[in-house]
Image (cartoon, rainbow, N blue to C red):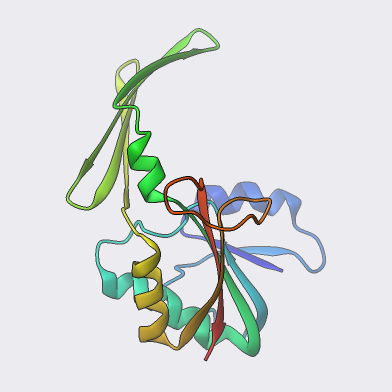
Length: 173
Protein backbone atom coordinates (compact mmCIF):
# COMPACT_ATOMS: atom_id res chain seq x y z
CA UNK A 1 0.00 0.00 0.00
CA UNK A 2 1.32 3.41 -0.99
CA UNK A 3 -0.27 6.63 0.24
CA UNK A 4 0.48 9.89 -1.54
CA UNK A 5 -0.23 13.55 -0.81
CA UNK A 6 1.14 16.88 -2.01
CA UNK A 7 1.55 18.09 1.57
CA UNK A 8 4.93 17.28 3.17
CA UNK A 9 3.36 17.88 6.60
CA UNK A 10 0.61 15.33 5.96
CA UNK A 11 3.13 12.76 4.75
CA UNK A 12 5.43 13.43 7.70
CA UNK A 13 2.54 12.67 10.06
CA UNK A 14 1.45 9.57 8.08
CA UNK A 15 4.98 8.14 8.13
CA UNK A 16 4.61 7.61 11.87
CA UNK A 17 2.35 4.69 10.91
CA UNK A 18 4.56 3.13 8.23
CA UNK A 19 5.48 -0.53 8.38
CA UNK A 20 6.38 -3.28 5.93
CA UNK A 21 3.89 -3.07 3.09
CA UNK A 22 2.70 0.46 3.94
CA UNK A 23 4.59 3.59 2.95
CA UNK A 24 3.82 7.22 2.25
CA UNK A 25 5.29 9.62 -0.30
CA UNK A 26 4.99 13.28 -1.20
CA UNK A 27 3.69 13.06 -4.75
CA UNK A 28 1.47 14.95 -7.20
CA UNK A 29 -1.42 12.71 -8.31
CA UNK A 30 -1.34 14.32 -11.75
CA UNK A 31 1.94 12.47 -12.38
CA UNK A 32 2.30 8.66 -12.56
CA UNK A 33 4.09 7.02 -9.65
CA UNK A 34 7.18 5.58 -11.35
CA UNK A 35 7.85 1.85 -11.16
CA UNK A 36 4.56 0.92 -9.49
CA UNK A 37 1.52 -1.05 -10.68
CA UNK A 38 -1.63 -1.25 -8.57
CA UNK A 39 -4.78 -3.36 -8.45
CA UNK A 40 -6.73 -0.58 -6.74
CA UNK A 41 -6.39 3.18 -6.56
CA UNK A 42 -8.48 5.14 -4.04
CA UNK A 43 -9.10 8.88 -4.05
CA UNK A 44 -11.09 9.52 -0.89
CA UNK A 45 -12.92 12.28 0.98
CA UNK A 46 -13.16 14.81 -1.89
CA UNK A 47 -9.41 14.86 -2.51
CA UNK A 48 -10.24 15.67 -6.13
CA UNK A 49 -11.47 18.96 -7.58
CA UNK A 50 -8.82 21.33 -6.26
CA UNK A 51 -7.00 21.86 -9.56
CA UNK A 52 -7.86 24.86 -11.68
CA UNK A 53 -8.55 23.21 -15.04
CA UNK A 54 -10.37 20.21 -16.49
CA UNK A 55 -7.09 19.21 -18.16
CA UNK A 56 -5.43 18.89 -14.75
CA UNK A 57 -8.35 16.79 -13.52
CA UNK A 58 -8.04 14.54 -16.57
CA UNK A 59 -4.29 14.27 -15.88
CA UNK A 60 -5.18 12.55 -12.59
CA UNK A 61 -7.20 9.92 -14.48
CA UNK A 62 -4.36 9.48 -17.01
CA UNK A 63 -1.72 9.03 -14.32
CA UNK A 64 -3.91 6.45 -12.56
CA UNK A 65 -4.38 4.56 -15.83
CA UNK A 66 -0.57 4.50 -16.24
CA UNK A 67 -0.05 2.82 -12.85
CA UNK A 68 -3.09 0.51 -12.82
CA UNK A 69 -3.10 -3.14 -13.74
CA UNK A 70 -5.44 -3.98 -16.63
CA UNK A 71 -8.11 -5.47 -14.35
CA UNK A 72 -7.73 -2.80 -11.66
CA UNK A 73 -10.30 -0.48 -10.13
CA UNK A 74 -10.28 3.25 -9.45
CA UNK A 75 -12.52 4.38 -6.59
CA UNK A 76 -13.26 8.10 -6.25
CA UNK A 77 -15.23 9.39 -3.27
CA UNK A 78 -16.53 12.91 -3.91
CA UNK A 79 -19.16 15.04 -2.26
CA UNK A 80 -22.55 15.18 -3.93
CA UNK A 81 -22.36 18.82 -4.96
CA UNK A 82 -26.08 19.19 -5.62
CA UNK A 83 -26.94 18.24 -2.04
CA UNK A 84 -23.94 20.15 -0.62
CA UNK A 85 -24.99 23.37 -2.35
CA UNK A 86 -28.64 22.94 -1.39
CA UNK A 87 -27.70 22.56 2.29
CA UNK A 88 -24.85 25.08 2.34
CA UNK A 89 -24.68 27.16 5.53
CA UNK A 90 -23.45 30.56 4.38
CA UNK A 91 -22.22 31.60 7.83
CA UNK A 92 -21.58 29.75 11.05
CA UNK A 93 -19.62 30.25 14.26
CA UNK A 94 -18.27 27.45 16.43
CA UNK A 95 -16.42 27.50 19.73
CA UNK A 96 -14.12 24.55 20.32
CA UNK A 97 -11.89 24.46 23.42
CA UNK A 98 -12.54 28.19 23.99
CA UNK A 99 -11.41 29.02 20.42
CA UNK A 100 -13.93 30.73 18.14
CA UNK A 101 -14.14 29.67 14.49
CA UNK A 102 -16.08 31.89 12.07
CA UNK A 103 -16.88 30.06 8.85
CA UNK A 104 -18.22 31.56 5.63
CA UNK A 105 -19.25 29.45 2.62
CA UNK A 106 -20.39 30.45 -0.85
CA UNK A 107 -20.58 29.22 -4.45
CA UNK A 108 -18.83 31.26 -7.11
CA UNK A 109 -17.38 30.51 -10.56
CA UNK A 110 -18.18 26.80 -10.37
CA UNK A 111 -16.50 26.30 -7.00
CA UNK A 112 -17.61 25.93 -3.41
CA UNK A 113 -15.55 28.33 -1.30
CA UNK A 114 -14.97 28.16 2.44
CA UNK A 115 -13.19 30.76 4.58
CA UNK A 116 -12.37 29.91 8.18
CA UNK A 117 -11.32 32.73 10.51
CA UNK A 118 -9.67 31.84 13.81
CA UNK A 119 -8.93 34.95 15.83
CA UNK A 120 -6.62 36.96 13.51
CA UNK A 121 -5.84 34.13 11.09
CA UNK A 122 -7.77 33.03 8.02
CA UNK A 123 -7.76 29.87 5.95
CA UNK A 124 -9.49 29.64 2.59
CA UNK A 125 -10.19 26.62 0.42
CA UNK A 126 -12.21 26.01 -2.70
CA UNK A 127 -13.30 22.85 -4.47
CA UNK A 128 -14.91 22.46 -7.87
CA UNK A 129 -18.60 21.80 -8.26
CA UNK A 130 -18.37 18.50 -10.15
CA UNK A 131 -21.39 16.35 -10.91
CA UNK A 132 -21.59 12.81 -12.20
CA UNK A 133 -21.48 13.98 -15.83
CA UNK A 134 -18.11 15.69 -15.24
CA UNK A 135 -16.66 12.43 -13.94
CA UNK A 136 -18.18 10.44 -16.82
CA UNK A 137 -16.57 12.86 -19.29
CA UNK A 138 -13.17 12.62 -17.54
CA UNK A 139 -13.41 8.83 -17.60
CA UNK A 140 -14.39 8.66 -21.27
CA UNK A 141 -11.61 11.05 -22.28
CA UNK A 142 -8.91 9.09 -20.43
CA UNK A 143 -9.69 5.41 -21.05
CA UNK A 144 -11.98 4.49 -18.15
CA UNK A 145 -15.58 3.38 -17.86
CA UNK A 146 -17.80 4.22 -14.91
CA UNK A 147 -19.21 0.94 -13.55
CA UNK A 148 -21.02 1.83 -10.34
CA UNK A 149 -22.05 4.88 -8.31
CA UNK A 150 -22.99 4.71 -4.64
CA UNK A 151 -24.48 7.50 -2.55
CA UNK A 152 -22.90 6.83 0.85
CA UNK A 153 -20.40 4.69 2.75
CA UNK A 154 -23.04 1.99 3.21
CA UNK A 155 -22.96 1.64 -0.62
CA UNK A 156 -26.61 2.50 -1.14
CA UNK A 157 -27.72 3.56 -4.62
CA UNK A 158 -26.74 7.12 -5.59
CA UNK A 159 -29.61 9.61 -5.72
CA UNK A 160 -28.76 13.03 -7.11
CA UNK A 161 -30.78 15.10 -4.65
CA UNK A 162 -30.52 12.96 -1.50
CA UNK A 163 -27.13 11.21 -1.41
CA UNK A 164 -24.32 12.72 0.65
CA UNK A 165 -21.52 11.26 -1.48
CA UNK A 166 -20.72 10.06 -5.00
CA UNK A 167 -18.62 6.94 -4.58
CA UNK A 168 -17.67 6.02 -8.13
CA UNK A 169 -16.07 2.79 -9.34
CA UNK A 170 -14.13 3.05 -12.61
CA UNK A 171 -12.43 0.35 -14.71
CA UNK A 172 -9.91 0.73 -17.52
CA UNK A 173 -11.55 0.19 -20.94
